[in-house]
Image (cartoon, rainbow, N blue to C red; front, side, top):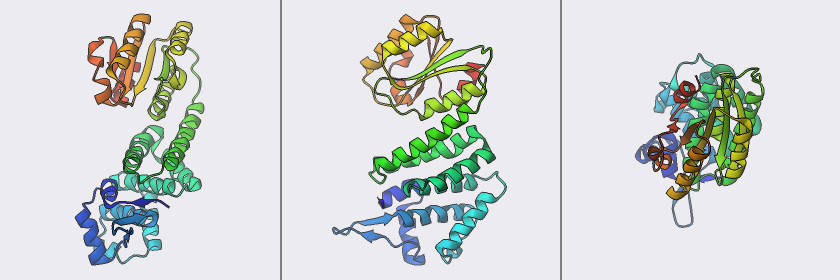
Length: 295
């Protein structure tokens, strides 16, 4: 079982620590435990309850009413919200929070149910934007504060990648694609989620995608590009690589493949260090940008 600090609860719920403590004292909503050194902490069940309470409050229920509900009654109210007509942010929040709860408990059947229902109701693009991406932000916050074990983060990532691969595989292969995209992550870059989603978007638009995945040596990339003659090269940068390494990568791509469109996404503070020095590099900041470039 994982443990969580009140600062992490603040980040996950957007509640102030003062509000959380007030709810504890006035409504007996949570019962924090204490370490031997008297530091407060919360467990998985309390995180689950607080996440669900926030959804109900955002949906219009008063804290005085929510506090009188049992855990089973709270779960039932959440189920009702998730089954209702879409169109409200708190419904999306409920889905995202339930997915987070499933990850914390290593509950694959629950995660599969939540993700599958989201796909049916939103489609892959909205599911990624409204559920998956916010979920990665939340788990990233938890991991950075040591409130989420690496095993839980890997559990989540692999489940989502399985869903993305399955969705990509379900798309028809293009017969005569107007564009060919080579997608890769540079050496020492391993976080494929954004790259996989880009692959889905491009395949959905009827483009040919040659997906190389993560941690690809430059000579391998160059060999594939020389052989396959793509119209576009696309990579994500997520790590704080030294400027000289980024400059070397971009300089080589620009020099070796002058007739190919070079596209890059990732953390802007990483990319912005060097991208402005290369006129042929196109910064793709979001899905709309990607769709514009690929049209």
